[in-house]
Image (cartoon, rainbow, N blue to C red; front, top):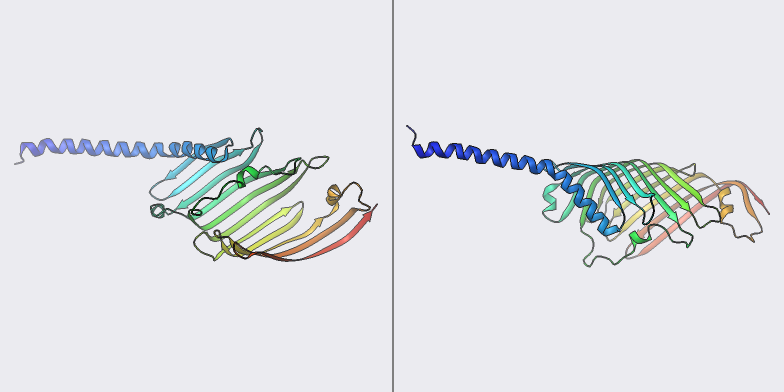
Length: 272
């Protein structure tokens, strides 16, 4: 026989478990919207720019996060500065407890960044890169794998007499071990810039203090747009021509920048 008291406890325990499960499910269901709203507020507070995020999905147990429809606006303009179609990430949740933002994977699909050179000569990113450095350095960050596909970067030059826009498209990036904690990071990037294929390879990458070795190259760039940057009293301007270049760079926070380059120009014609 069962004691009457035990019979009364079991229904109450079952009810308590149901309440906990329902509350937990409600919290998990509401968490993505909370994260979306907090992210918008925090990014706006840091950048002082309008921010939009269409949707966030996440699984706190596996560390998977997906962001859809991210847009960072321009100050005082309707045009966006940057937008991302989709961002997928896999975090190491336990690393966050040690203050280390550690991503197993970060994949960006369909991104666009719009740079603008203003008539003053400043760029529309000046407000994002200026400001005092954090007193103790940046937080610990590691990305085991970073991939970007379908990227586009445009430069709108409003400092010219007539505004001109240059575009780098079909940007593909694959990077490994990008971190503030190690110096064996690598990255490979490919794109088509103003119609010319270009590439970038980086080794020995460390985010902080910054250190890297890089080789960048471009093949068959049309040189005729250079006439737009010639002074009004220039005796000669480029009528046609193509150029190819390769540059090797070593950048170190302590030792500075060291670079050497080679260039080749073909079929050049200069006219008064």
